[in-house]
Length: 263
Image 1 (cartoon, rainbow, N blue to C red):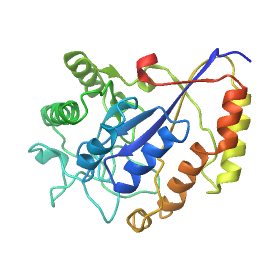
Image 2: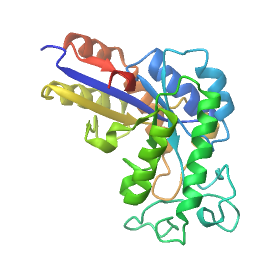
Image 3: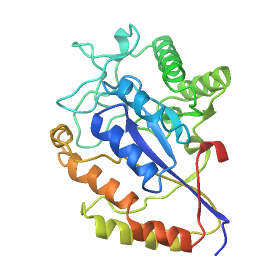
Image 4: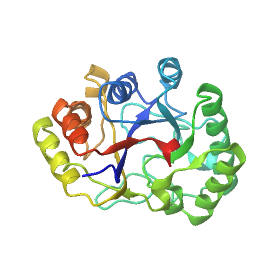
């Protein structure tokens, strides 16, 4: 097999917690991840900047965020954006409605386009200030914000041009692979499934996205109804991405690990 298979492994949600910052760093330095997406409204974004600016070889994406999905930790906009928040001033839990999930979603609220523009500009400008090496934007809880509203997708594309950033290729046809099933949260089974899927790939460029994190009490307290085992999910994700056998198989299959700059 030749390096006609390219794989972009993306570690999401840095900035949201200490556990995520450390997990994303380890996924890159010890594992197969090559890009880290940072949430600018996150409480730990300053720590993320301190951490990743010591490792400028790691590709950074500005992870545009309009939600606050966890029950016990909340994020707020960087701007005055009354149409994007709940009565406490926090982002809503969801962007789009979900089956069997009655939490409020932004799409069904009276959101204002101009407030999203201002908020995204603020997030991008903070991202470039904290991470001068940032190359691209990506979308939190969506493949791309065009899935939320085509006008927002077009606006994001315009902002990328304004700031010289790559508009996340996941929203432009890059093939996403699942890697492993959601359940069970078992490192050995996930690693085996990942290797099996990689062996079945045809030549092309693919993206894999997940949320590695280290084991902390803070992470164990993170979750919401229907996703109470965030801790088990994200710790086993990190263990999978850093698994020696997975790395060995990728080398053996001559799969080229890439980042956004390579696109």
